Length: 499
Image (cartoon, rainbow, N blue to C red):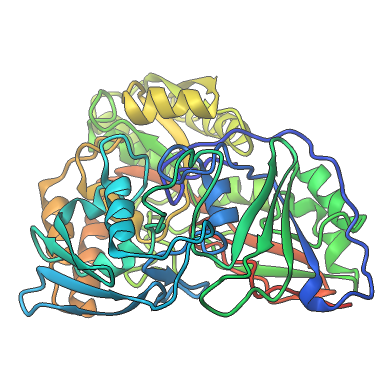
């Protein structure tokens, strides 16, 4: 989930950060290999542990840069080997044997061993873990380490997504301590300093086992709002903005030869999530009526202008099982009124909408309130902090309806878990998702997940308001930065700056 600031790619919410001081990044005559790349963002980590509430910001700054997995999710959405040199799977699909790369060292100097891999996976699946992929990896029955270079994972049932899901697991030195404020990864950068409310700097790791970073230092500089972020780019205080937050400000960059505006692919969805366990949202007709009473395209346009996409489901176009399902529960006030009458609520009803206190949630909540009033539904908006949302909604399920951003790709599978915070429970969907995970081929998996998603949408399990745009704005002096916002990661090691 995204916390604008998300549930990670490790399920955790962060708060909007304080305005950071600007540090000049004026071009010098230094070699590009000695360059400092300054990255502007509104997503400061809450802490540095992606299983302990670090939020979207910790994924953006540390994933792939400081920490690595057995596998990596590339910017184009494919999965490639990283710390896993190779692997084999047994004929029944229940046993995977991984061989680790040679010569890998942690930033502390310790050599990577199978014990570190076992520790890291167990950290993600632990009871107190806040990782978004915790439930997906619950299929792991046991982990054996017959020698330092070999990891054997035994599953309780087949999991065609195991390798993909392992790309979310950061491999950490099993002796490391204080991971919320320090790190011990194997990535091309090591943590230098973290100045809370201001910046987080990474320096090239001289002992890196792979291809060294193309720059010497990366500084993530944090700002409290889009205006401050844009001003930093305009004054050369930062070289690139990871995710533009103010589409109205894009004209000043699009018409300026000193900048490049990139419209990439996003996996971040804004949801109106119902608590499907409680009245009136335990009634599918009520959920369908609310969905049809909200003009998602008008909402998207009011916030993002020409950018962004309405998908009609949890599945973004970058997922293999994407279908345009916007016609299933179309915007239609007459249909919404008819469905309310069929549900026994011809005069509408009232409910409280728990809304995170950071943009765009308050504005979107006001829009939803206005739209639903047209069909007799009264909405009381309850503004809460990100931390309150996590405790009240995600942990305690103490809500009727809420808004939230979900950043992960391939996360429609969360609807197969009846215990997830929104409480959607359709045994047919759970079975289809389970069958998809036990598929023998990607085509079979795709077909099953398309069926599951079609049923989820038919049930109006949530209202998927829109898919965020992924707009990266950068100085034309730099190149090699990632364009897509898959799971909020931002690989910095290929960024080159002209001298």
